[in-house]
Image (cartoon, rainbow, N blue to C red; front, top):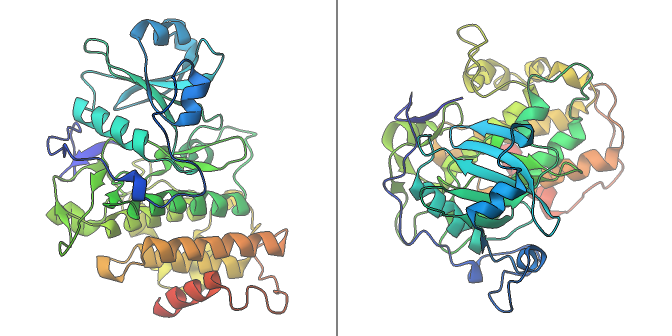
Length: 383
């Protein structure tokens, strides 16, 4: 999928980068983890990782870590350049992203990402270990996410590969939403602007972490309702009002979350040129299904083989449809989205093994009076 500006594939180059693109993480809500500290010596990668302070690497160190960027260590490629698996002198396994100087990611985005991930820390955001700015070289060093991206586990699976279970899909959706909530509740709020399946990375237990913050933008503050900027992102995930006007809001991210939820439910890509005309855009293709509850089950990923609760599916589709509302004001807040998804995760865990798409009876008083259920029911009534 190509990144786009004004709905056509063009190189990403954030000329409108804000030099104050630094959220005040001191006041940002956390998740119980300690914020990074600049105190103490940074004598090794492990100490540096614990303090959450990004370290400056030399190009030689990273070349050695990747065996001179050996092809066998290549684990990913994109418009930004290439990602290599590497081992630092300390023995720590990392992912090293080398920006292509003529690629789709510019120096401005590099700076934004270093600033962002140096100051914001959450279990559902990828950890930036360090960076390199040797001459014209621009490299980023991240914690290694062994299971790769959500994209690789949803689409074009190799024969014999186990598809993601319904429960795991809900877990990934909820975790990604928690990462988004952390950004939206920062001071000032941060609009991620590039939420998509390829930017959701997974650890060995399929816990998700958001990555690639080069397009992140400070959100509106005070009486402002939006920020105006050139249209950047990935086709298929972009909110319609942002694509048409360049007016960016927190609800733009909610739309992208809805697209990711739709991918998780259907197993289809946000935009797939291999499909016939009329079915290439996932949101357009799914629209008739979203309007008819009797057809919900017909849009589900066949790889799930019916292993899900129909009641849970109906709830998940309701949340997805709310996030995909054409009018931004009708979309739920990220807090309501998180509450609804957390409820679905708890529901799927409580019910145990799903029964071939059939509704499983709930135990008496299940989640009765919980804030998660109340939040979800408020969304469902609206829908």
